[in-house]
Length: 355
View (cartoon, rainbow, N blue to C red):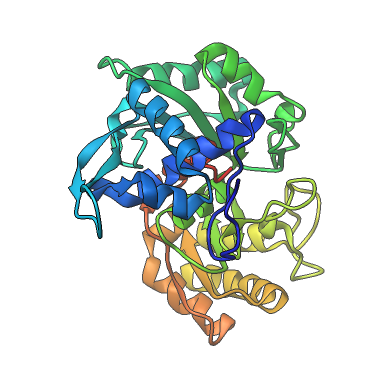
């Protein structure tokens, strides 16, 4: 039976019908244990599964090459316990950041380590077929050195989109993508499972997996402006997976027209300031929008990212901090590759029970 009396422990179930969930729990604990490994008894205690269920799962993982012995650990009684570790190189995921004007792709091991990366110009307005062909070409280029074990791919791009079904919405400035089933098209082309999400959600997930705790907003300023929200350690996508359209909040009623159809959006004001060479004004505008978000959600911190932030990071941190007040503001880890790395975690999240 399950042992679920400890409210602070991840709980599993021994039902055969959801064996994948239990395997994901075990894999995630193997991942977090690192090279030191973890014993079967500890796995049972941490998951709430019976020792017998854990033994069956770990035996299967060892047989499939995902787990291996990592030595022995002294026991309080009886023979030393065998500890197991994840074999990170047995499987890989691809993460793709599909931006309006470029594509970044990374190849990531099960432990999150990036082993290859590619960046190439790409025009999102060139048409769905040409963009998909370019994406597939870059992914195959990552695999050209004979990588074994491509398990799946995560693709992140500007929203709005339906994360559940992998169907794009009307991306600002690119109406031809409206309704395009990107997930299914890529899954057929790559012959692996594919997850599609917004660029900001992917980056926020990557930060959370890397250890960014609590509740935070990741604000991404590149060719557009959006937000990824992590509330209580979980990416908040909303009931229709449309949360985070931060750039299209109106803060100047009689402001300039935005491509989204509204006037005075944070995005159009930020980009206009940058285009005229005024990053301080762009940072101030971004800070006004961020302050609205902080006041609404009471989050712990604001993280900044994207190519335009990376050009003058100190200016943006100072400008946003001045508007936000007491909530800490800093540049997010990961730099310009943060979205692509987070996109890989979109798929790895399912492997480790975080999806």
